[in-house]
Each structure stands twice: as structure tokens, then as C-alpha cells.
Length: 123
Image 1 (spheres, rainbow, N blue to C red):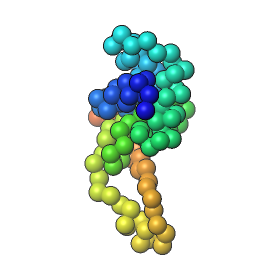
Image 2 (cartoon, rainbow, N blue to C red; image 1 turned 45 degrees about the horizontal axis):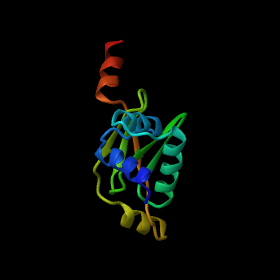
Image 3 (cartoon, helix red, strand yellow; image 1 turned 135 degrees about the horizontal axis):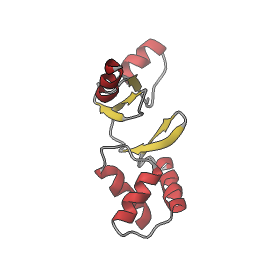
Image 4 (cartoon, one colour; image 1 turned 120 degrees about the vertical axis):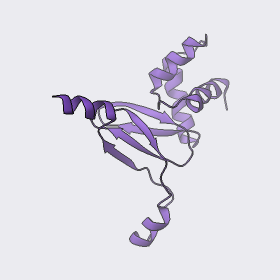
């Protein structure tokens, strides 16, 4: 793993915010690291291909990146905030229902976060 990839991985592993490539780039700059945004994107692509990070595709928004430990996500339909959801592993259930071996899955649950729900109630 390259030094750049290690630095990017450190940012992702220390984050609870599911950063975008640009967030990671800004985090690196804030630490005094000299790395181009293109290098961040290229390194993220390799880290994803190597299974070192998870990529969370966001409809119409930049992809987010996350740790690889098993967990799912709650995504606010209004503001796009992402929260980790620690649910049981449903692979066995899916395999029984579908009759196929499931290597992995990525469950995204959509909701209104507390802030957006409160704003909607005030209207």
C-alpha cells in the first residue's frame, strides 16, 4: 500500500462522517499533507478495488467512503446525512429465501433524520 493510500485510509478510519473524496482531500490539507485531489480519487479507487474501503454511492451526490467492518446505513432523504446502523447480518436469511449464496450485501435504509423531521413538523 502506498504512503498516500495509508494516509487516506487513516482519515477514513478516524471518521464517523462517511467522507467524500473532497472531504478527505481537505482533511489531508488540514494535516499539512501535500496531495492532489486527483491522487485522492485514484487512491480511493485502488483502495475500493482492493477491498480496503467501502464506497457508498449517493444518488446525484458524490460517493462517500467508509470502513469495511460489517454494518448498514441510514440515509436521510432530505439532507443526505448518513448514520451507521448496526444490524444483524442477514446473509443467511437472504440465502434461505433466495436459494443462492450471498457473498455480501449493502443495505441502505432511507428516513428523515431528527433535524429534518423536526423542520418538517414546524412547517
